[in-house]
Amino acid sequence: MSFSADLGAKHKDLFESFWAHPFLRGLHDGTLPRECVIHYVGQDHQYLNAFIRCYGLGVARSPDRRWMAWFNEQIRFLLEDEQHPHHVMCEAVGISYDDVRQEDLVPSAQAYVNHMELCARDSLPVLMAGLLPCPWTYIWACTRAMSEDPPANDNPFHGWWAFYATDEVQNLLAEFQRGVDELAERASPSERDRMARAFERSCHHEVRFWEMAWSLESWTPPRGKTMIGTAH
Ligand SMILES: Cc1ncc(CO)c(N)n1
Image (cartoon, rainbow, N blue to C red; front, side, top):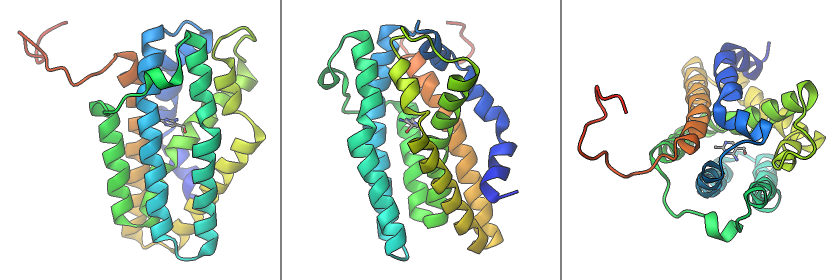
C-alpha cells in the first residue's frame, strides 16, 4: 500500500466524522441554515488565501521546475476555479460574495492555518502531507455523495457538490497523492513520522472547520459564566 493510501486507511474514522458532520449533512439535504453558510464562506475565503500562501512556500521549497510548475498550477486552480463553490453557496442563500468575506479568522480556522504554516516551516514533504487532507476530504466526500446518494437537482448547493466530483479534481487529488508518496519514499523515518502527524492533524482540522461554521464560532469571550462545567 502506498504511504498516502495507508494514511487514508488509518484515519478512516476522521473521514467518516467529516462525512457525518451536520454541516455537510445540511449541504447534502439543502437545509443548512443561511447564517452557517455565510460564516463558512467568510472564513473559507481567508483560509484559501492562507492555502495559496502555503503553496507559495512550496514554490520556495521546490527542488526543481517540475515541482514549481505543479505548485503554480495549484495556485491557478485556487485563484481562478475554486471561487466557484463559494459563489454557489452565496447564490444559494442570496448574498453577494463581497458581503460575506471576513478579515479575521476565528479560533479554529486560525488554528488550521497556523498548523499549515508550521508544516511549511518544516520541509516540503511535511508541508505536502499537511495540505493533502484539504483536497482529499472534499473530493472524497463529494464523489461519494454523487455516486451513493446524489443531492437533488433542486438542492441549492448542488453546484458545490458537483464542483468537487469532476474528473479534473479527481486527477488533481491523484497527482497530489502521488507527490506525497514520491516525497515519502525519499524521506527518513523521522520525517515520515512528521508527515503522518501533519496529515492526521489536518484531518482533525477539517472536521473542526465544519464545527466552527456550524456553531458560528467567534472570538467573543464567554460572559458571566465560564464554559467549564456549565451546560449551555
Ligand atoms: C477548510 C477547507 N478545506 C478544504 C477545502 C477544499 O479545497 C476548503 N475549501 N476549505
